[in-house]
Length: 197
Image (cartoon, rainbow, N blue to C red; front, side, top):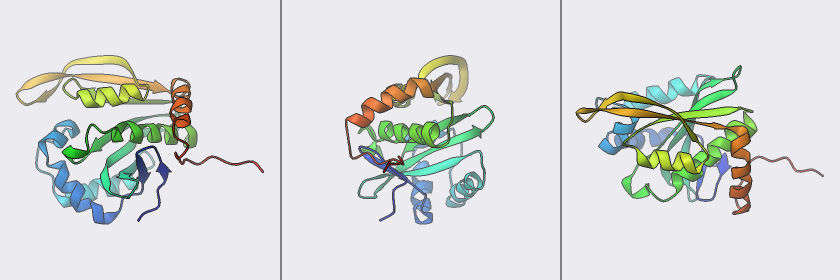
């Protein structure tokens, strides 16, 4: 078992274990995954390892493993293009196995990532992009408070046609009331909070 960095209702976020890289590299090759990750060629284990190393050695990125409370690997979530001056970042998330999708894991992981961004890193704004065919991403981002801010028409070429890119954003002030409600529903959520006395 690994120690959870943040624990939500359904999932925990923790550091990436090197032993999980072969599994991640393999699952990235699933068409339902690489379609949304914008890959256009087969992914090798060395590609995944190099990507994780690059992200881990940069102050502009933070990556986490999403796992169940019994430490079963579920996916990845991260902050990218972190700007300490503008206090913003983009976010990304993917769930690996088809049987783990549609169970609320992505929403829970995104809420924990938002907590980390807003309450630990003191960011002011998060933003993300989804493609018009990725309805699941649009739904869980909306549940976490993201609002549509723009649309790039026919921005992405996939599966023989062009698709719109949907840009969404979230301000800390918009997210905090959602977090208070979310947190109140489950006292088992574990995030860093100083205790007085």
